[in-house]
Length: 150
Image (tube, rainbow, N blue to C red; front, side):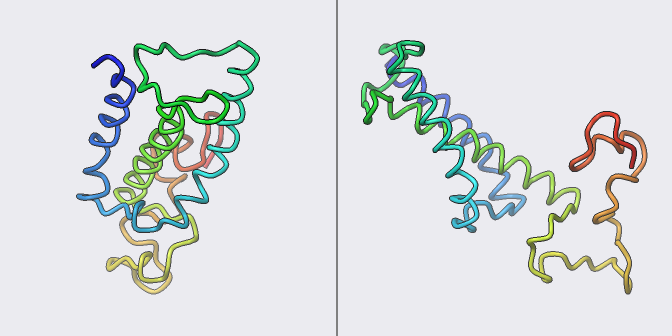
């Protein structure tokens, strides 16, 4: 069963973030084009990096902890799944924060942005794009790094 350890960790990650899609309605899986366009650069860069590192003898995988299914370049299937699962979980988490905080990024349809507490031209109770000025710790908001002033 040790050979399934990597897959078990990945399954745990997916199970742990599944409620974000189901309960908060992050809609990550319901927008496949957006998800694929997000994952594609990750896969290209990191699969290429791993294949290079494996071929150069700089990187190996313990055969006791992977399934043994190897793809071209001697890359374990488990590793490719890692490059899909971990970013998906990160995206689910980010989208869940956006849903809870009411943050928008500009690609939402007008229906998605509607806030029933908004008056004409108002920002509603969620703060909308005015997150950076929302009080203590504002510099750590969406896109705000340490040292930035809102």
